[in-house]
Length: 177
Image (cartoon, rainbow, N blue to C red; front, side, top):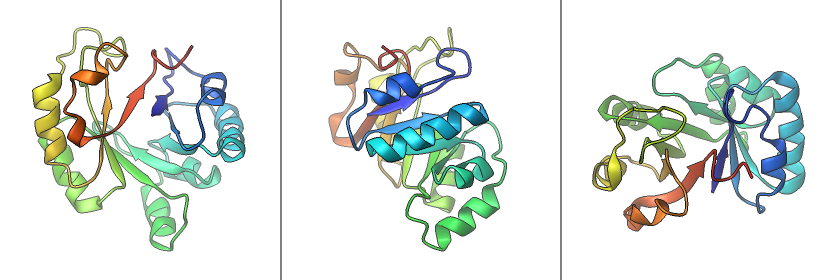
């Protein structure tokens, strides 16, 4: 299970992250520096995996993994990739996967996992087209790494995905409490 922060819907995910079981993950997107520092401490003390969205230098400072958004570049990518190559155990890499171009990037970078979205209609992107279970499964099956479902995930939608390819579920609203 992955908890995602969001600058509008969940700018400070620390309270929600404190309720996650050991071994679960937090993807901090757009988190302010102080929030990220506190989240990094919380993740270490609770045994959570932490990814920082789009900022390799912030990920390095937090001893966290890096998430590469699909439609925006990442700052500080090279220093992060060098730390990853040097064997930093916390330097996980994830990519956002919204379509075929992201699949090609995943094949080049060989991340640890991909967040395939939007699986279902989501509050984060009202009116945006969703993949639905069949297209989600088709996209996830072409990803060379485990696929995490994101977008409109909740108790009524999670079971509709092809379980064989779902390595995890990610949510904002369903986990913020």
